[in-house]
Image (cartoon, rainbow over all chains, first blue to last red; front, side, top):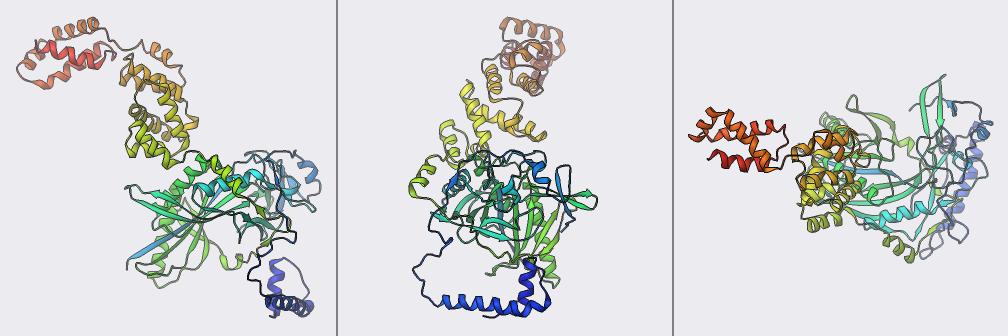
Length: 95
Length: 478
């Protein structure tokens, strides 16, 4: 399976990556070769194999439903570019 | 051409855990902005989500109560998209292996017909934060208190064929999650919200039409109106030679119209993949049996019991059990009064409900508690007051004017049940109405009402009406 320049641009857009036009060709090649490897793995018969959800064969530990966190707003907002009335301010987004 | 409507609903029920689904920050509503958003909720580097056991238990409860398959192995996945109120750049949700699959629920329409609606799946996910678009010098304000609040997204099959069916289904789920005590059902605070997938097709056609998704409809009334107006729009569009496009639409309640929000094609590329920070959640039979044992009596069973135990009609039992709080109120009142269950039911469905509706408050916030209503009904049962006086006492209780005895005292005491006192009043009324007496005795029966009215007036409304009726009849007939 091979990816073209438009696929690369689309993937970059979805991931909000700013890539150089001149690199697109080599990205397309690298990504395509990864997909080729996946394609190769797809030829293995996995009929009776449960798909893995995680490389480690263990299950999720659960936490008790307790409130343990304290308010650290000031601490967190020190590194925010802009805040007001306790809110984080970001460039305007309206659908 | 005759058209058929096809509707499927996605309901987001906020689970009533104390802490968030992946962090130990509080989920309490209404806190100061960002005071309940911890490092995990903010998506700061190096944090690790850990699953809240209670969220899993609540989802399992829902699954068991709807006859669904509760998955022994479920997996959290990342749903990737960018929006400022989602700081990680992905929402942790479930995709291929949700915790609940293939259940169903029976709904009942106003005319009494029943219908089964399939539940495709219910999966756990975290809520996003809130964007405030009021003017912050041209910027948007972000409050992340809600980020990480556990949601159960309940997805129905496209089984509903009218807005009314959709509302009946939504009400049923709303009642169920409250019975199960897994969601407070508060729609005003957004604890229970709904998206509707709506399409139309020519009657008899097998394939579904292209659907539009109506977002975030936050009341039962709006669901019905939004669906109806959207169906109208789609039919008009097709009949004019147009085509419905698959998109997300927003219902504008003020204008009563739906309008396009964004085309779903582009937004749709969420690139789900298993979240490497989280391991599969494994549940065993013993766990599920333990959860099953904690299931409360569900609405349908309680309704049946109300019919047999309290000899109520199926209709009355249905209304009383439509919310767990109302059913609890009813049972608490019945247990505390010597009045019969039917009288209790009538008061709850009549005076109390109309008052609650009028002031738009929930029965749990009723100023008249079940204990107060029970005391009031006892006063009717022991003939201290008449049914008519009871309504005035009820109003007094509602307005916090005191307890039942205090209000009756203020009204000048209970009703008059003393035969001699009533007889004296009757004698006086008859003596003062010779003309009417003569007419009555010459056959004008209708005048009986006049005499009753006069006696009641003389007693300032406090004479026991049954006694007045009986004694008056005897006297008048000489």
